[in-house]
Amino acid sequence: MFSDNPDQKNIIELKKISQSYDGGKTWIMKDCDFIIEDKPDQGQFVVILGMSGSGKSTLLRYIAGLQEPTLGQVHVNGKAVGEKERVSMVFQQYSSLPWFTVLENVGLALQFQGVSKKERDERAMELIKLVGLEGHENKFAQYPTLSGGQLQRVAIARSLLANPKILLMDEPFGALDIKTRLTMQDLLTKIWHKFQSTIIFVTHDISEAVYLADDIYILKSQPSKFVEHIHVDLPLERDRTTKRDPKYTALVHLVEDKMIAVSNLD
Ligand SMILES: Nc1ncnc2c1ncn2[C@@H]1O[C@H](COP(=O)(O)OP(=O)(O)O)[C@@H](O)[C@H]1O
Ligand SMILES: [Mg+2]
Image 1 (cartoon, rainbow, N blue to C red):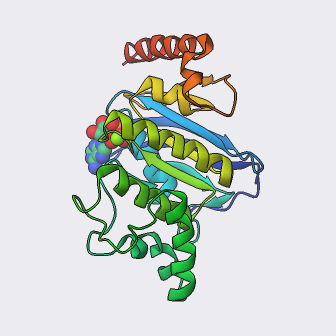
Image 2: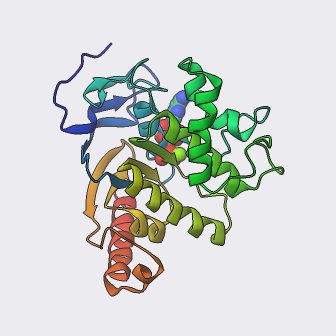
């Protein structure tokens, strides 16, 4: 397919991506670039905002290697996305395998790599503890045995074990109640700092976007393309007091204005 790109300074590089589903008569995405520099000692939290149908999930599918664009190049860690360069994804819908236990779900990627059960279970348990699911490891990963928030913790732990450097999250907290959602936001902040991960996160919630992000990118639709980049100039360490910071409030208003302006472009 695509050739490798030795330029390692970008962890994610989508160049001149175009997508058509009707043989080129109409293009839902046209010459779209999305370039995320690698920050190995720090990691980063990147949020994608855009109206429904603007191509957010499609972009994540390209990075995860679940779909190839009609035209353009997709590189992760300087390598063409494919068998070797897989990134897993956390979806809004619970994406765990309900006939497997929490422990088995989290260790799944290692099972595919042929790692022994003992090592798999040990490494999976570390992450199960990290996401606060200790004591639940032998339960089946299904609702209502586990709550919505707990199932998303399973998906996050599984994704981290597969590849702690990149986490793709497609509206992961959309179905959660507000309290669980806020707890999960803080869990993600902790994970980002611990693993220095690059997290690519899709949400519709602007206050969530500003709270979590280093950088926000806004996608317009018809055809899809990034039209705005906002750097979130807030301290890296965030907590509830961040939301009382006038800079935070000003950023929420700025992003809201830009979203409205972008939606008027369509
Ligand atoms: N298989 C497909 N055939 C035709 N159009 C599709 C297909 N998959 C997605 N699309 C279109 O691509 C656009 C982007 O979809 P998507 O990435 O799901 O948007 P978002 O996640 O931002 O809501 C939408 O207009 C959608 O209708
Ligand atoms: Mg979507």
